[in-house]
Length: 243
Image (cartoon, rainbow, N blue to C red; front, side, top):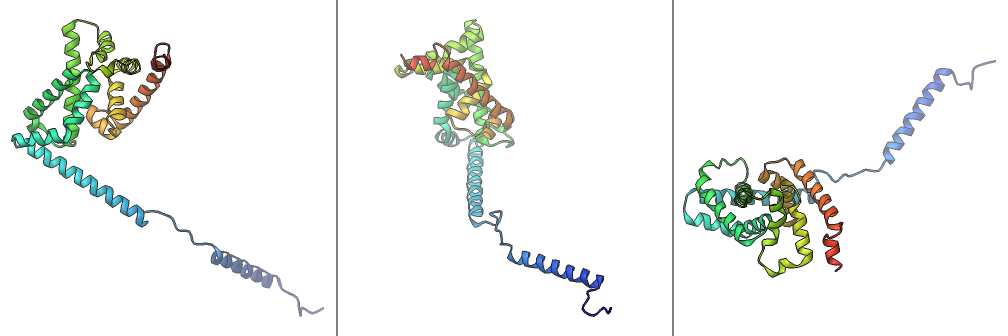
């Protein structure tokens, strides 16, 4: 019997290899081209450019404000007040609970900035440094009030928020919320006020309070949890709202 018309083993192997290669090639040719929206995406590039421009402008304005105050001229501090005065007063009011103390804290902050501007090294933004001075001034005022009145710190924390003279603050719901805020730890209350009321970012809060961004986020989480518990207990804001 001859071998004509028969495929030898080595010929079969080569034929299989060619068929496999042709199949892979066809699959690769048919594979759709996938475009990922990554670093080269024009929309992302435009957004990053806009963010970088705003950040550069903010830093430039912050540096210019620091230089104006460092010069010692009254105009520099007028610029500081115009840029941050309203927010400084609001923050002090929310931390101290009454307008008189808040105004004293802001005034003390400006005096400290004037006395200490030479010590500002630019390790944080100038605005962050100013807000840190304000928070520390508010803390010092609370501590002095405790010593002056010779009352336990817990009693002061519970009552100081009811001192605000504005009639609107006597609303039962608002008073209940303020009493609940007063029962938080100092750091939880400060983080809550800075984040939820004043709108600071956690990176900014970390710089103001001298804590990490993660610690700021955790303090806010704990503050919200405790406030939720206090406001839903008998006599809390939920009860006040239903009266």
